[in-house]
Image (cartoon, rainbow, N blue to C red; front, side, top):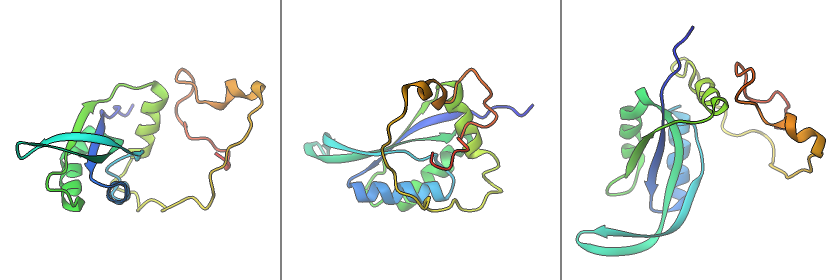
Length: 153
């Protein structure tokens, strides 16, 4: 049986949302990160012995532990910041989330560049109460295929 990879949760800084989205896209296309949100909020930093305040952004994502240094090199190469702040935290998630990451990074070295975007638009829908228990992958069920086969999801 193949040994399960170790994963890290990653925070990557960007000064603007557009910079964060550009960096996110670049790192996903290299299959160095799983992807995730670019969050923006007010922030204060100690910079050159002065407290500075402005909105700031963080990419929240995941990577395989063995891709850490390559991720840093690529992020620093693409970032427009003076210092691209990147932090790594050991990842401990549900079995379903670990299986999803395992599948996302499986044989990444052999894979081609990901398809840019699904040709669809996100939409909210009403879910009958009777379907809710079957809608989410169980961390305690079969995790060989965690992504849904339903083309609408």
